[in-house]
Amino acid sequence: MKFMCLVYFDDTSFAGMSEADLTKLTDDTIAEDHDLRRRGKLILAQPLQGPETAVSVRVRAGKMQRTDGPFAETKEWLGGFMLIDAVDIDEAVAIASEGRIPAIGRIEIRPVLVQVDSRTGQGRPELETR
Image (cartoon, rainbow, N blue to C red; front, top):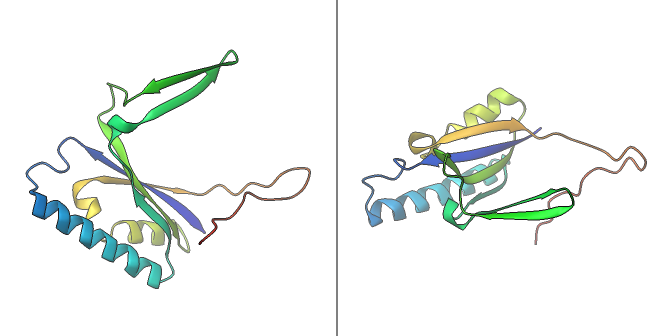
């Protein structure tokens, strides 16, 4: 079963970290991702650039609306994601709680919703690896 793990941070998540601390965090989390891949649990993981780079798009009354940057009322921001394969939610929680990120952020875990086209029976495209 696939689970999406959404990683959230706030303004205090990286407070007091030196450049060396941030480099070590990056190195550690890359190693953690490789370990999860070797164990057959990681499908894809990636950090995201900061919320100031975000663009939101919506269409209302047939018109596209674009909003740059984060919403002012947001206290936490989406900092990355992991798509994992786990037997059930308990294993997904165990996987997501490993490593360094839960100590400085919050991880929301959701089962992936599997859908198929009602006419063709075709599911959504799978992740292509290069």
